[in-house]
Amino acid sequence: MSVPSSRGRPRRALALGAAAAVLLTGVGAAQASPPDQVDPFDPDLGPNVMVFDPSTPQAEIETALDELAEQQTDAEMSTDRYSVLFKPGSYGSAEDPLQARVGYYTEVAGLGASPGDVDVRGAIEVYNRCLNNIPGSSNCIALVNFWRTLSNLHLTIDSSGQDGCRASANFWAVSQAVSMRRLDVDGFLSLMDYCTDGPHYASGGFIADSRFDTPPLNGSQQQWLTRNSEMPAWSNAVWNQVFSGVVGAPDDSEFPSPPYTTLDETPVSREKPYLFVDDDGRWNVRVPAAQTGTRGVSWADGMTEGRTIGIEDFFIAQPGDSVREINTNLARGKHLLLTPGVYDVAETIEVKRPDTVVLGMGHATLTAVDGATPMRVADVPGAVVAGVTIDAGETESELLLQVGKENGDHENRTDPANPTTLSDVYFRVGGPHVGSTDTALEVNSDNVLIDHTWVWRGDHGVEGFPTGGENGVNGDTVRWNTNIGRTGVRINGDDVTATGLFVEHFQEFNTVWNGERGTTVLYQNELPYDPPTQADWTRPDGTLGYAGYKVADDVTEHTLHGGGVYVFNQNNPDIVTENGFEVPDAPGVKLHHIMTVNLSAGTINHVVNGVGDAVPPSTVGVPEYLVEYPAP
Image (tube, rainbow, N blue to C red):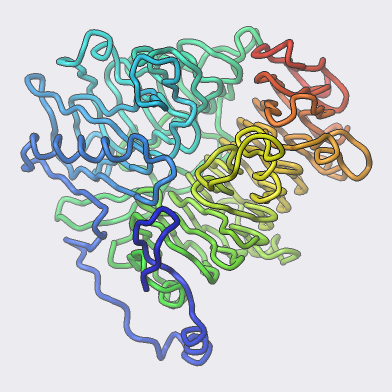
């Protein structure tokens, strides 16, 4: 059924009403209606998917992409979601390069089995966003350029025909919840926009499984993770640039000058599943296999190792499909493809079978309704959830995503060679609407891989909070008391690996790690902006504030490579946090290359466990680094 969104645009509700719930209880999967048939040559992917092939006139492609970019450039809190797909072939030429911009909630991807199957000559770009819509002003930034994706194609950069500055690079000026995957890039890529009233800080970001023939320009990116890629070199660092399994990565022996962290190999990896069209015109999903000790791209010698699943083996969901229908199809052994849109979820989507794939297109978004947990993944090997955003709703949820049953038999149900994997799974509490949850992501299973996530309790939004006076800076006091988000990530399972863990603004510990032998490769955190008073940001035992990264006191083995905790207590600049990181003092607990930094308000007294100097407002923008903890 249709319900109005908070912004007045119609969207579909994904909910189980009372009658439907009775029906679900009384009707087993064997009695349910037969599943819809999927045409493997022409699947119905809904109205928000654009599919181009080489026969499409380029003018038609450019018009469609220009209109979409114009619509999505300022659509940060909108409900619109889009996927732009290119079938195998060539697009653009030296005489007429294909040039496009990518706005909010937009996925651009090739449909080849390998990146080289889709060849684009031109530019696919993200520029600084001018928040007052006046180019050339001092408020054109990349700090809020979230939620977009570029993947699985060969790009020969050609910006000719644009103005002098714009013609100098392909700009990808982005921040969190943006990924570049499976790209083969010829030409100069800049991760900052130095043309639109720039450069200004950007706060990305993530590249994986990509090859570059020219060193990318990091520029003003505060932090960045590049994983399993190849490049001649890297340009520079700002605060925390991390490389894992990257051919051509910079040496990090002089850390923190510059602040590089380089791992020769990635300890555990699995590339994100991707759609492709085979030589016969059939649509499929390729599911890469998990690997250990990897370096370089996965497609250097042909198709990425893994398995192929025909599109007909997926239940293709669209907003309006019920949770009952989704769960019935999952129980039958179908995989789940979420087409672009916002799905209001009043009951839990249950992923119970081993090796099930849940793939979101165009930043498909699940929003909790009536305190539901939108998705739960059982203690099974090989489940993959990718490309999905999960939003808290107005009624507080206990969890937004749970992996594994609390206190379950995790050791005997999971497989270290086939870990459950979360790729480009993002979480949001507040922003487009009021949202509340106790914990966003809880991982109870052992042997789980988290490959790029942003877990965000919104520091700004369009909820309509009153501002000024007792309401706080930008309504922050109201936000603190309304958008409840206590913990961002809680890891209870053993042998969990996170490559690209971005967690921000939660009201207690942003990340709590209770499991053994956990590994994080790049951690980025901002403490909450909005505590009204020190009392609101003091723990029951009297400790000032909550560390941005907490490893439980009884953990004996844990490793972190490249971590940063930032402070910007804009609602009360006098607030103090005792430590950025808290970990047990155990021989097997090791933090490698960590830092704290002040963004102009509040104070962090120490980097970790009372070690490291304070970062008060007088040190704004100058990090306090530790090479190792404990010191060798």
